[in-house]
Length: 206
Image 1 (tube, rainbow, N blue to C red):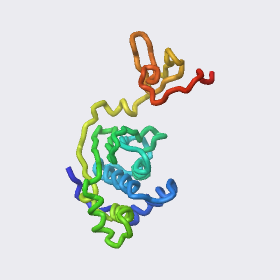
Image 2: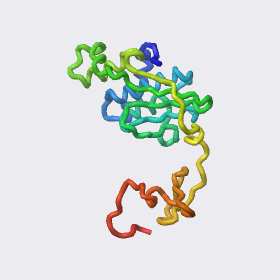
Image 3: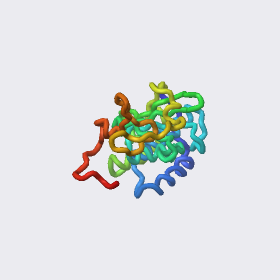
């Protein structure tokens, strides 16, 4: 499914871009992409943005400034647990209306870098052409969309957190149901062999 809509009005876009510029030293094309994706999702899901509540969930497939564009447009933030990273290394987002469970995935058209030149012919570089072009391109040239269904019920992603437990090995507290049960033992991911770091000597403080 490809959305057929014009680019947002310049005045609307400028307001969001001003917010982004407060977060970053300079505006970049990926921030604009994230912003445009969020605004399009609001139209597709018929939701007013940015959200003051926790009705909308955004699952970004990469981090960085792109995710900030999504957050500014939608009101979904990591601190509110309405923005989640599912790291596939892709500039793409799945947006979920938690009231209806309707979900849509949004990603850039593979030709956007080339098409950006049609909207910024006088740009001094490809980077500048993308920065300007991504603001001016209509949705159907800039983005692709598809309705999707999450493999896990959305309530599990944003519902009440399970009770905190302690790891049987390191004794550290585990939140949000991230423990691993092995036989009768409750382990954190690190002690279960899924750590992202290796301790360098000593046993730590405490």
